[in-house]
Length: 173
Image 1 (cartoon, one colour):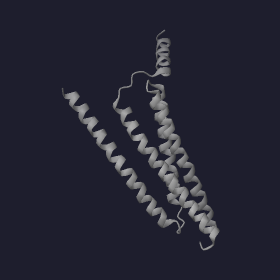
Image 2 (image 1 turned 45 degrees about the vertical axis):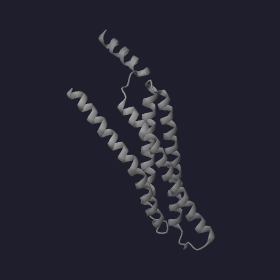
Image 3 (image 1 turned 180 degrees about the vertical axis):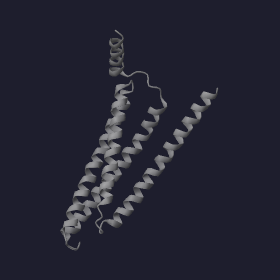
Image 4 (image 1 turned 90 degrees about the vertical axis):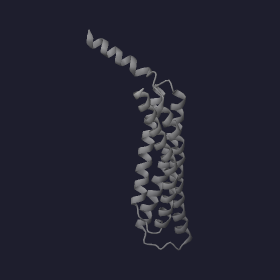
């Protein structure tokens, strides 16, 4: 009785945290885009690097979860997580392009008054916005998948479970 109550409270806590995360992530993304829009003429590169690292780490986590799901009986969810992780990696590429454009602008001592420079500033802002939007879409699609993965029992790990049994069997002999 007590353990089922603990499991229920644990699931309730997980659902609450993931629901809060689904609400907070778009708000954080919008706040970041507002800050980035303000900084576009100040040419600070720290935010570009931070977004790149964050998106790359999240994409790596999503790919790890997809590999874990593919090894279980939830292969369809694993392939879905792989697609979602790919979307996050594409966002990482856009963040890298934005960082490269910011580095290019920091080398120039030109005021943003010529049409070419204004176009390049706009291109950097668009790249950064696309990176953040792709990251938000990816996380919005990944959180329900992760929630389902966390709350369901893992029934079978196909390739490694048999290998571990074989290794244990060989050690005992």
